Amino acid sequence: MSRFLLVVPPLTGHVNPVVGIARELTARGHEVAWTGSEAVLRPLLGPDEQVLGTGSRLFRAQGGHGLAALRSLWEGFIVPYARFTAKPLDGVVRAFRPDVLLVDQHTPAGALAAHRHGLRWASLAPGAMELGRPLRALPQVEAWMRGLLGDLWQRAGLPPEEFTDPRFSPDLVLALTGPALTGPAVFPAHFALVGPVLSERPADPGFPWERLDPGRRKVLVTMGTLAGDVGADFHARAARALELCGPGVQAVVAAPRELLPAVLPAGTVAVDRAPVVELMARGQLDAVLCHGGMNTVGEALVHGIPMVAAPIRHDQPFVAAQLVAAGAGLRVSFPRVTPQALAAALGTVLDGTAHQEAAVRVGTALRAGGGAARAADHLEELAAVGAGGGTRSTRFPMV
Image (tube, rainbow, N blue to C red; front, side):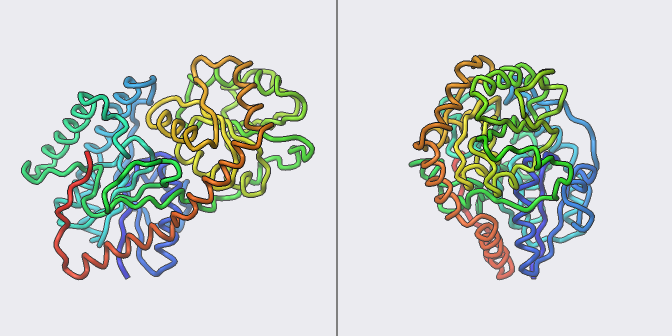
């Protein structure tokens, strides 16, 4: 049996995929502990998971578009969260004594702690921002990001000559995507593209299943948990677009009610949160209108559902571009798409067969990555190398 410590940010979209990996490791007899904000993790994980808290605090809301959003993410969350958790995380590692840490790329403090204690660690790439260097055309931006990480390394008191980009373990990088989306990009040998990790989530007894009309095609509208107030205008345009799609289309909208227009198309099912994976698994959805988040895209594709993506920020434009390149969906402009253009895009994926067939094909390929089971295989192999006293890898990641 090995001990695995999971280091994830207090963000639902980052926690959910790791749940499947944690359950797989636990089922194989390993001891698994989570670390981070217990106030956030506990409601997501339930009462039985081992959570070693690092404390909680509020961080600035992420906003903006493009490079402004990237700056907001790094300066408003990644860096301050790393500084806030560095000391308590060091204590967690000392107390739990893990064999391997699984570290989300947005929690670099986990990699710094692993390096300090001489422990093996695996990186988890939950999105496309750090895969394949999508920002290679902006070397100044890449240099700025490396500078922030170098400062964290220095603050941690680690030897500067040993600096390794904490987003990329030199031993194992688990990516929740696959070649069907990333295309011809070539990754180092220690990058494992395992595809989406789907995990069973708590049932939502309040979802009105009885309101779903079996005689109408259904479109799920979900713009993620970080859309905030910028989503209100988009939801108004989306409501009008769905009305233009005609009475044969029914919308399932997952968003806070204050972000939605007062009047919605007839039959719309509007809820704060929807059981997305269950809706997909039950075959209740014909298309998804989303922000292009890696989780939503992966979940839809493994269920063979085509999409229209309206990316807002961060890695979403890259994921949307991959979706379009794979033929499984269309991309529209989040701030500028008109209701008429959005209705046309939805009509294209609903009425034709090409995008649906591509979604099935891509989803099948993504499932072949192995998901949670294959991720657990890789983590077990990494733990076995550590238990055998093997030397640290000298491979350096693509940065």
